[in-house]
Image (cartoon, rainbow, N blue to C red):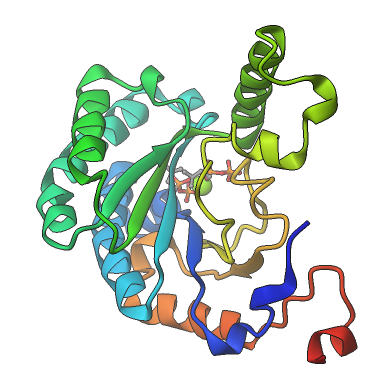
Length: 248
Ligand code: IPE
Ligand code: IPE
Ligand code: MG
């Protein structure tokens, strides 16, 4: 059961911020540009937001970059996104190393093109001991796929007699999720005006504070991030308790 330990959001920055980076296509369309131009500008914004999160004292930043449903987009767009991913990892690797930021992914990455998988694995390995922040990219990620894979892992453990069905708790299931070892997101931001989770961190966001902005991702920068954090700090997190209970 979640504990109401961080209910006074005003006292501290969110430890973990998760973002649904949406609106690249509409940003481009409104400027008469191709969708990929929006994705390119979006990739630049990632760099600014990583720096902003660090300055705000956010330890974990988890970015939704490609969903398990995004494979159904036109092949040219998917291919362009994969090339962009490979070059963004290459370009940003020195920043992670210099600032001792651990790089991580969630999602079924083996299905990505091999050049992406290789650069991801290299950067995960290089940064695995770093502790000044954690940047996680959700790639080929979808909560339904994640929970399905988690249940398969648990069933295999049960079959091998490592766990009995009676012993299964939320804790044991949580440890099978891609996010095992990470705290749940305190703040979940979605840009572009859409108000849905689109299969993102659906279990982990059970008690996250949600923040929606109409700003398209390619326009979401340091100031917008700060605004979201400030709003988070004004929220009261109750975890099922009453406001009076929290005061005690
Ligand atoms: C988010 O922007 C990026 C990805 C899903 C990869 P979109 O590409 O979804 O942009 P819109 O929603 O079409 O404007
Ligand atoms: C969610 O955005 C996925 C990412 C931001 C990577 P989508 O644009 O794919 O979501 P829907 O289709 O609007 O729900
Ligand atoms: Mg979208």
